[in-house]
Amino acid sequence: MEVRSFLFLFSICFTAAIAILLKHSSTWVPRVLMRRTHSKVADLVVTNATIFTSHHSLLFAEAMAIQDSRILHVGNYSSVQDFIGHGTQQLNIKGKVVVPGFIDSHVHFIPGGLQMAQVELHGVKSKDEFASKVKEATKGKEKDSWVLGGGWNNDLWGGDLPTVSWIDDITPNNPVWLSRMDGHMGLTNSVALRNAGVSKYTQDPVGGSIIRTADGEPTGLLVDSAMKLVVNCIPEISIIERRNAMLRASRFALSRGVTTVVDLGRFYPGVSIELSWEDFKDVYSWADSTGNMLIRICLFFPMATWSRLVDTLKHTGRALSQWLFLGGVKAFADGSLGSNSALFYEPYVDEPTNYGLQVTNSDWLLNNSILADKSGLQVAIHAIGDKANDLILDLNEALIATNGFRDRRFRIEHAQHLLPESVSRFGKQGVIASVQPEHLMDDANSAANKLGQDRAYAESYLFHSLLSSNARLAFGSDWPVADIDPLAGINVAVKRMPPGWEKPWIPFERVTLNEALIAHTISAAYACFLDHELGSLSSGKFADFVVLSSDSWVDFEEHVSASVLATYVGGVKAYP
Image 1 (tube, rainbow, N blue to C red):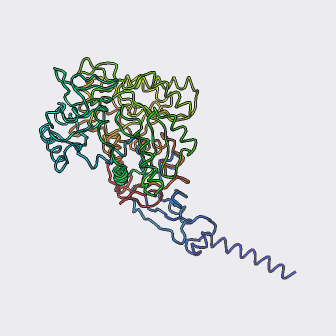
Image 2 (image 1 turned 90 degrees about the vertical axis):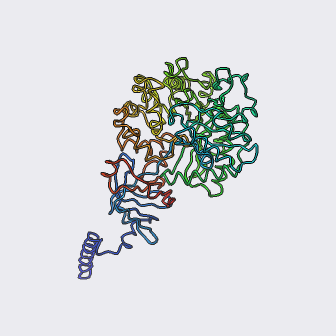
Image 3 (image 1 turned 135 degrees about the horizontal axis):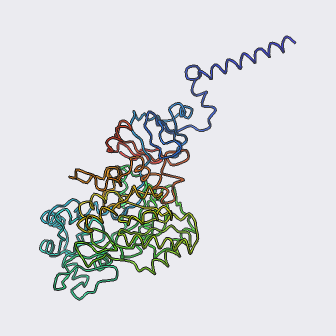
């Protein structure tokens, strides 16, 4: 009896002692004993950070634990302590801002990497500088080898378009192709025109135009589908060059905090439809199978090949690995504002008879969109002008009427110029506006000249209005048309302040910093069906994140400006 009483009292005392030790575990109990209640030990624990998670249930946190490339837990400092074990790396961010890895919703990735090694004409502000760069590129070139490059913007030197006369004398032995920054117009020289058989007697192809002199001679400028007359003569770029371009582009993207891109393929409308498939086979599949993928990539393919994508998905599924994903199909409705080929209801002010170009036949576009959508594919269509956007919104309504309601996440790429009454249709129809804020900086100075002040002000880059209509914004860059720099794009979307301006352009269409970050992270992931894996720093998702130079959220919000200190992919440092 006495023994039983003793044991009973001992058990009570022992239980009480354990309770006291647990209560004061931070000082009395070794951490290794405390961690026995958890089966998971983190590879990396991030602490002392200002974490913007992009997740609505917990928008800000100060610490997170990561294991096997995924996030175990996000919360405060004490909540991650139990995940620390033998071998756990602890990363003290020292108060810096941390955001999810940026997702660029619209790039042309391999062309961007190629252009990094070609004639760079971004920012050129005069005819002489233009010619000088081309002349420099011809040095050491063998006769008949191509001089390739691009990025020029005629608005930077007053608006005059370049012609063959700018470059013929300095390129007498080499064909030249130099694309405009928007990819919808290019300049070639007389050598290339002769080789391609383009003369005053060549007819404009459907969906494109050959810019001519008063007597009908080609000026060297080709617009939209007319570009293929010369581009198709350019020798195929080798597999090695394209692989190197992809790796070059990946390293550059990481330096800007981009951990995932949506690659829309080559950006020449009307040019060979097989290019994206060649890149998929020769470059991306190679990189994925050999461990050379540095960032995550979601691929969209030409709409004309929708059935091939359906067949591929049946055998592979959508996620080929944690790095490579098959997206959907893309097509073009019109051209671009800078090339006066975006499709509008009213004519261009500087070309009173020009309404722009519809670069794809309406019946073909509708029929193939319906077939692709019926097969379960995601559809993305390029539309810039107000009429082009309405045509594609009508097309989406036809998809719904024909194939029924489903989670299709139909995308309009660019959605730059919208009639005010068309904005609400995005939210009502569930259409994603895949937009590129950086283009605003180019168009702010030229839109009024092309559209008139009232039209430009009423319908250009209506970001706030789209969000207010419950539309989903997905931010991207359109690189190499614009720089792949999410932080710069976020600054533009929040401030809308072009260089040299004293007031914002259309200030009521500005968005908040939170809204801009969401558009470049979780909404961008949603726009390509990857929101269950990416886009927010929350449990179970890939640990892709970026450490910014801002010392506090107040500092970041005040200046909307920061630089990338480090980029992590799957919890592993990928830059610098």
